[in-house]
Image 1: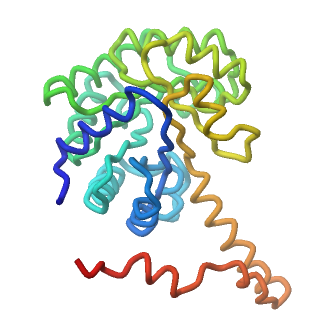
Image 2 (image 1 turned 30 degrees about the vertical axis):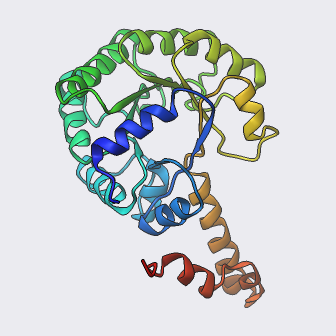
Length: 276
């Protein structure tokens, strides 16, 4: 039976109540359907993966195109979709609220707002401004019924400011401002992960594992992490295979990299409509 938007949002909230689940990040309809078929319980968009699929750099895609992509991803799958909504595509808290209302209208089950500025000289928003933007997003969600999950992101470790104390201060402030889930992409050590989980307890924490890691899912679950996302890693893995094969042809005239390709029969089997 087709899942309604309300069904997806309700299921998504339940996933955050206990245990630890993986939230993989597809970048188009095909990758979303493959992940759904593998048994994952929810999906998340990836700003980088989506941007590369459009021939653009991460952070350079317009709000309109991101909203169109979110709508497409929601329609592609019966799973809840969490949106990487970057910094809200607005300069002011009022603008963030407007953007969030548009995002909610796409049917996403959750969305994240980050505190990065995009300015390499001043990469993080002043805390008061960042909190005001989370509050604006919270108000916009509450006005629509409040069932869309709000994720507050502290980008310290992603933008070259790896200060765990400031990261925790920001996450606590975002939790108090109404974020339902907290996220500090780039933290990797057991000590930092445990510190973040403890700081915002009982609210759930998202952990990014976007590269080869010593941790397995059961390891981070034992640390109290509620959900794990992979960001653009699956997209980069796909592009990695593409680049290796294309470079072998362009540079050496070799075609042997195709030995690692998925078979057409396997892909067709995934995408062929079921008999029922």
